[in-house]
Image 1 (cartoon, rainbow, N blue to C red):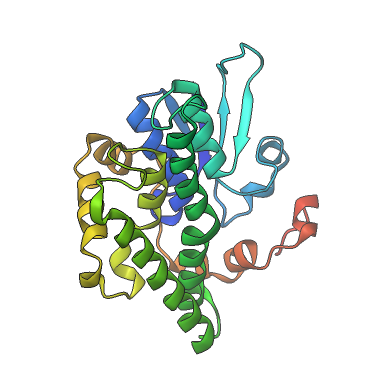
Image 2 (tube, rainbow, N blue to C red):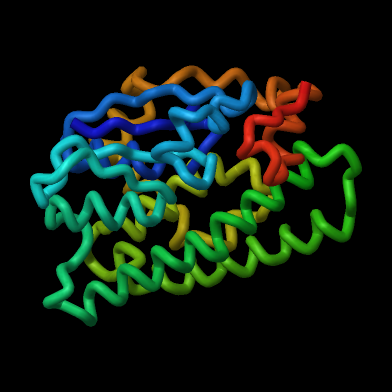
Amino acid sequence: MIDLYGTALGASPNVYKVVLLLEELALPYRLIPVDIRRGEQFSTDFLAVGRNNKVPVIVDHEPSDGGPALPVFESGAILVYLADKTNRFLPPVSAPRQRSEVMQWVFWQMAGFGPNIGQFVHFVVYAPDKLPYAITRFSNEINRLFGVMNKRLADRAYLAGDEYTIADMIAFASTHEFERLGQDFAQFENFRRWHNSIKQRPAYTRAWHSGKAPADTGGDSYREPRAWKMLFAQTAKYLDGVLPT
């Protein structure tokens, strides 16, 4: 059994990518809701497994070494861990070229694609002041990154080649509702083909419509003053339980 600590899939692409893989692997799991608007990510119990006070976090109660339950935080690390555990969706270390291809796109998403989309959404949706420079800066960068992906997919089915891997899951989760990103996606036909192909997979339907995740209450709930402070004004003191009122 895998415990997955997370929030609404629509509110967290990082939780969503883990659910996608768990559904592909058909591993038994339970999603334990963490209300990040109320500061549950700073509770003592959660920090014992989620050392970065962020979701997602998993706890594997049956790790391959037969030892005690194993917590893993950071969505990219979780996907690599689960793929290695099951020997699926990530080539083994004995196939270094193929594995490196997948890992490069995993880190591409983790280091650039996902964070830049997140910053764009923050400045468009959640920032109290709409700063044209910031919005343009991140809009331009995600346009470039979509271009990188689109060119990559021009002559292959998936990011790492002909096989569907965790690289695709991790990028797909960031782009599930890509129409909201304010880009002209007519110029990214290869991306759209790739995106549609993933939505045809049974695991996609199970992940998005499983009912295991809490319902997304919408962006307005994250703009309420205390929730906004909890999410966007964090400092180290929050780790000591000093939360905003």
